[in-house]
Length: 178
Image (cartoon, rainbow, N blue to C red; front, side, top):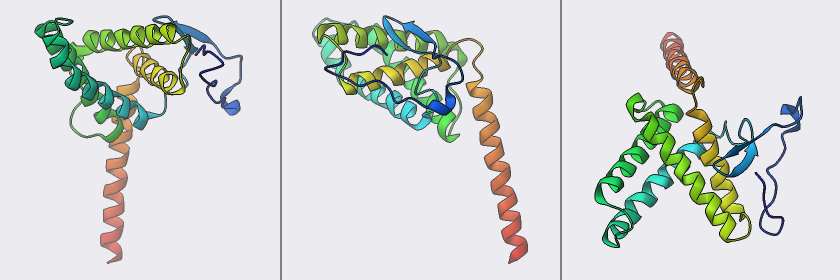
């Protein structure tokens, strides 16, 4: 992520992962590593999704009252944010079900809009603060996972099933030992 040196620091480099020069990509006006630096920080991605939902739940009433957003747009944005949380909660913990695939375009647009907002804030402030940079990394990583061809859900399902099988095997071993 291109950061203003006065406000931010570059992302830590994982030298073990660097077999070739780092590729970069522009995400709604923000240049970042490709694949994203935070792609595997799943618990942080869930936390970011939860934070995005909480912010929208808190701010929507005042935006509607002030005329900055109509009620239908706020409802759609809240639904997309809730689906984002549902999806990441399932990916990280295996709880519940993944979000409905029909909400994928809305979730992509929600993240794209968040990236445009982050880019606008960075322009206004003449650079990224450490917190804004971290938000950008996390939103970019979530958006990356929603691209066509990503196997995030397949891998999560495999991991959930593997954990379930391992837990059953451990219970059988404990029962035999008793």
